[in-house]
Length: 362
Image 1: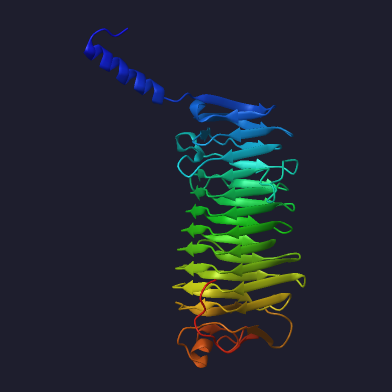
Image 2: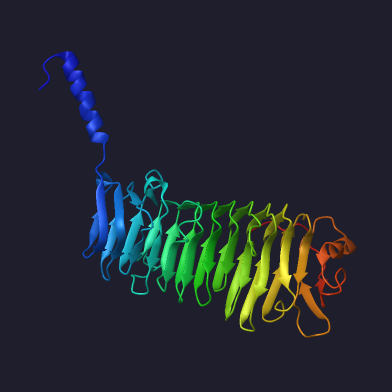
């Protein structure tokens, strides 16, 4: 007990300090029954690869901190609900900034349902890697996932979807990641209202709606940068109402598509990029391609750049719809295009529709 006033005040201060100290909980191997991780018991330190078993739900409370020891990961075969708030995000990172291996979701998981809001979800979460790790921060092999109002920073690949997995990504920030997303063949994605800053690439191979995003200062590291459309099967990649700003190389690249593919670019804004569009003259006309109603404000190297190899036709015509090209004349637009007119080794020519006035983003 504290009898003197000074001692009483000291006791109050000590009591206040103790009440703010959180517990530390060590976790490893398996979660075999429905479990909730509470903020009061965090940080939770994952010491071994952690499995959330089939038909089991792990719920993580707002404000909770989760730390992964070196090269550990979480494998979810059941259900994971990580729902924070704007003021109390759930954080995931490596213990003492060590490399960790992210999250793997299997096809047995509890798929997210956008109608009911039930299933695997991350809402108001914060993820931080070390630059080269995790190699895949969130990797899903057939599991449908929702990610919203979150931030992912300093990882190699933030999100990869495989085996017909579907993902919804909304209202989130991606920063300093080599690859924001790899939406692989047969997968589906809805990527809307996000900010992506100082990253390198986005690979779109499955049906994707990419809308109302802001992308800034993408680097030019490696073979591919910017948005790379690489469709090996059927599907629609619909890129609309986005802003592409200060890309070191190209903003969007059509690398490959099939007869069952559609590639749509509409109502986007391009500013201060090295090259706005880089297009395969071999695959551009394979499926359905539509580029129109975009604002191409300026460029450093080209507005549109074709690359070989081209098709077997003697001269392929690539038609681009009506867009806003600033104050450029028809001849100046052609001069801002790398095709057969500037490089005879490219056996394809870009044909432009009449230019439009400036188009407001919808």
